[in-house]
Length: 370
Length: 210
Image (cartoon, rainbow over all chains, first blue to last red; front, side, top):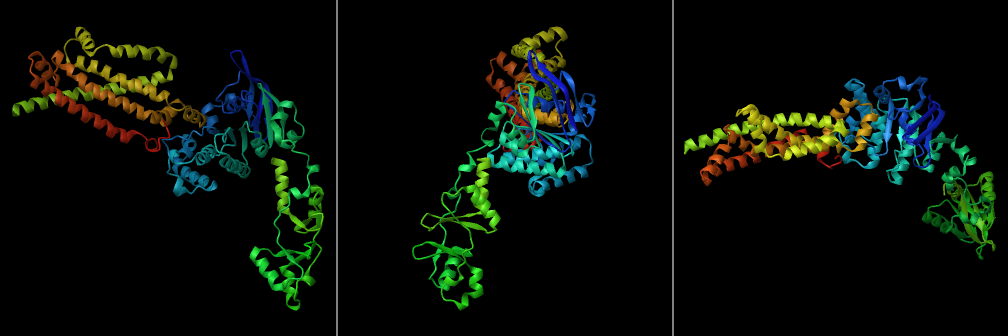
């Protein structure tokens, strides 16, 4: 799809790119990352000939782009920049249609493109199409910036740190949107960032550059596992591996404040307690508050009318573990047991809390992303 | 009394004529040169200071020189005033175009616009507020400079001023000065109206662009 063949560039005595060769497959999300001045943006801008190489060749779909008219090339290559660069003198609709209009597509088709694209990012046409960029938030503007790049359905879209000027919340949602759009439309995306988290989230392949050379090309998982140099390891930083998961215990992830009921209490009290706390199961304890089992609303409904207290309905099948038990083993037990939760007990057999699949998921997320 | 009003009116019409013709010529040349110079940064680096020096040559001196060259004709007035009217427009065009934020130029290039399309669709619209600012300045100046036309016997409101100065008649000076001031205000207002029409809507509110 896109191939750099021994590309070099020098400004004065400074070597910007040193004999770069790589290939990006169709439909791939390729992310360039590296310290500032490593040549990643320069590499990106060579794809639409905003910068010309001194030597070497760049092939797009097998065609040497040096032989393509540069205006034509740019019209068929999407381009999104950090500063957004929506033209403030044009409405949202006009901005989106800049490239289709340069390509002299008929007006009806341009209108349809605006409608389809706004629809895709869930910005209502009637509300946004005739707004000016100055009337919109940064996040909305960059959404339009991306739509402008997609308007003429180019096979390749270049993105130069498109989200680094946005606040973290907006950045996150735009990252997700871009990834979805890329997969839906099957675009090849060349993306430059200095944010390793962004790279790991979005990339099919990460290309790490330093001082005008490519240091490593690898999918995110492989780069995490085998960083080629210490510098890459440093960039991966906390994403690589957190504290040793083997040392984590189950009580670090349990939910506390669990509703209990004593086994000699009546059915009615038990039901009203369930209603009050909006749960369908209570943990049953004895007079010394030691764990006895669980009672569920289903059992009460089935046989509640023939018994007075809940004692006969108590089931003690839910697995119980103890504070201080290894978290990983407890999670495995939770999954293999098929129960929705585990009961965590203190040393004196009283209830400390429960571990649900949700607490497990958030614990794993914390380990992965910090 | 009627006679007086009529003569003021006639002088005002000539004065307005000079102003409109010269500002129009000056505007067209100013914008054209300004666009050219903004494309040639090295040349404009030397040429703009040079033009600024030329700009400081007093109008009287310049008209005097032109009289020696072409004589006391309306053409002399028009050439001189057009050149003076050009300066503010030229300077503001260059300033306005150079002041267009890099992000818009970069985006325009990235979209695949050629030089002309970038100028026409992005840079000129964004520079328009500054360019019109130059036009306004040039209009107001030209109204006052057009007084010089009388110096070489080409009429306008300057007639009253010169006659008044030479005969020490303040009333006569005011006959020229007051209509000239009103004219300057009125034409300035006209440019403001024009500004509303030609400055892109997106630049008016919010002030997103520069």
